[in-house]
Length: 537
Image 1 (cartoon, rainbow, N blue to C red):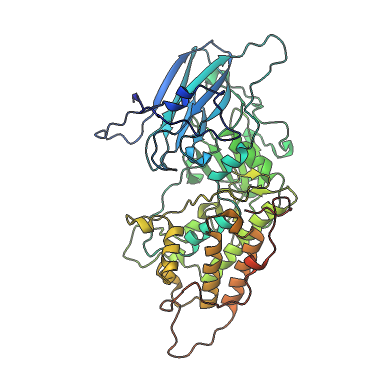
Image 2 (image 1 turned 30 degrees about the horizontal axis):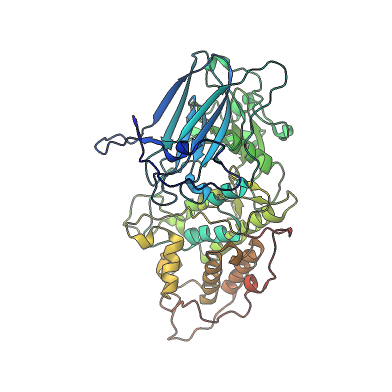
């Protein structure tokens, strides 16, 4: 597909502290862009734009890619991937920067192959609201090694960390927003879709091999940094044995860049996640998953058994969790919509609260544990697993961020429902829409009708409202979210004496201002500063 010049951006770019500056590239670089020339009549549903550059053969090159979203009219409508040699992919989301027209860039160090051609592509993501991609500028420089020491280019050190965290779901606020979507399901259910795997933009230079097969070695690829836990490293031969040479009959899940297998490893049932040939899994995400999971152990967090990076593979091995994802127990597993609900969605309100509490305990451990503060940033129903006792275990740590987050970080709500009505597009906003009307019961899963203690439901709604507040400083920390959820669970277990004519939860008003509960722990707890051990959001 061809690219076209975007309209010239007449205003000055919005330079942000810690990001690109007017000295990084001239203003015209960030005021102009190449974007996909979309043919509305085309029936193709997958396309890309690829540039080919003449480079020295079998040499190391420093590649800097410049972006500035001057074509969007609102935030979070364009998300795309960039590929170098069809091997290394970075997820580009201008929303990470918090504003439109904010210049930013990514650096790579790439080995060219024997062709003397370097291909760089931009590809829209399937989860992007607008199927378009753009590129503002590109620099390619050959690295000449005259000695054993090479001074690698570096990105500016950063407050950019806080900018990238904007995209993530963090702290108590984002956790309960996602739980609104997974606990208070809409009457309009959607059919399950194969989800696309998450990816994390590669910030800073890293050493990358090209995709040429003749350069691969049967030896360890040495792609991983030295601080990873080498005691967890497994051989590729063990992975083949565990999955019967990656038998397709053992596939239990599939994402945009990976397949998930069920296997047997050392007489133990395991889950093996392998990046697909030709696509690859984001290297930094792969590394982050290993770094995080090698530091933590908790009954509500999935355990990493090991990893394999031989022959340029990126394979992760986890403990097997019998009941699958929480999403599997909330949405239809069949296309037969004549049924009022799927049999596998019959989780009681008590079970759902227990799952919420378990996941909150795992996240609270991440925020406050010995590892020094870890923000998950990708909490959703597909990333919460359930064991045979329906105990929640949080998984997928590739997008995690180490360190205490800024209290003003925004919330990225990932859960949407299948609806054309504007107020129903985002479940969290849709829930608040009915909450303001005093009719939050309109989004209760039909399975739960007449089974919820009204006090428990009010407490859950109250907690949700606090977690959805605009300013991060007004939202509760995860510790208080956990307290509130445990309180809601206790209220559900408390018998309620109801008169013969008293309304049930389905027809009682849920006006949020009603003073039902005596203690509001999230509000009454003392404020926690960023310097405290418990991260505030």
